[in-house]
Length: 184
Length: 189
Image 1: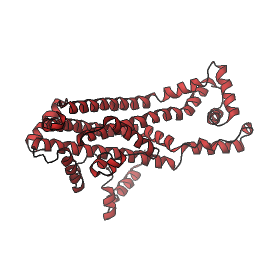
Image 2: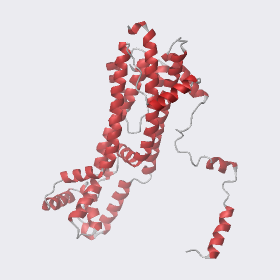
Image 3: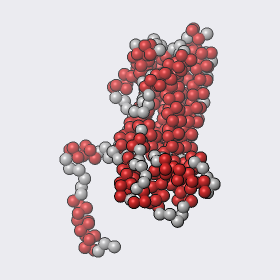
Image 4: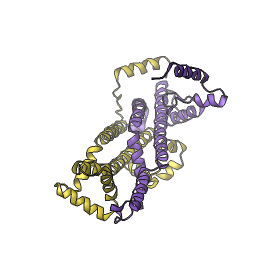
């Protein structure tokens, strides 16, 4: 239990902590809550161009407003799916890099080697095979295992984008097949 | 098929790959080409379905690979757990040493094999214990695999309907559908 003097000192110190003061600090702190950025809409020019280009390919030369609307929805959802998959790969890659700093198996192998050197009852044992260091695939599997709750959240974003993509492309197909003589 | 995709920026955009470091570029290309060879997409809409199917199938293969790696990496803690149950009187450090060296040292492997046999167990029990310990994670991955499988089937159905010129409106959750209709009537998303 903190004394009254300690509580007073804590409060006094806490008043000094008013958050970042420099523009760089503020810039960094404003991204503290940023996780993957999938909950925000991206209406930047680049993605607008990409949507437009996909729409032109799905409904070439069409003036049917319904068809163009659904093609745009399908294109947007397609790009969103690509973005979510990229985020997933990035997250797994980051986790692999992070765990590569101190691979658990390497640490265990070193610890066992030290025990081999200094522990008498185990003197007769051969040193640990250096091949026990995990491969890239094993590290990725471990990263995926650790990240399963996080990936489940991303799967929800993906499922939503996929449902939107599926419906929109179905609508586009319906409208295109009505007027495309090649499909008769 | 590769040249067709590389020479068309639109197709290259929809067939863009997201590979992990351990993913084989060669295997991915082989899978993509095999699926495209089988489906033979006739227009851009069919290419979009094909691209989505390739992504799903690649993720399925990757998750299956991860499943076996997860079980493999659970073998050491599984053996530790078994030895702790069997050798309750021994020091925890010795048991951890045995479990550690079991996978890299023949003498320890023989020693642990003898301990297991004394209790009527074999090395297969280590795999069973590893499987038991990983059940939660495997169930999670299996759920995802089932979802990917049903998406693949739906895409194939859409493709067939599209080719037959019988494209039907996909089922939409009523709430979401109304929402979308409203947005559409009000001038789009």
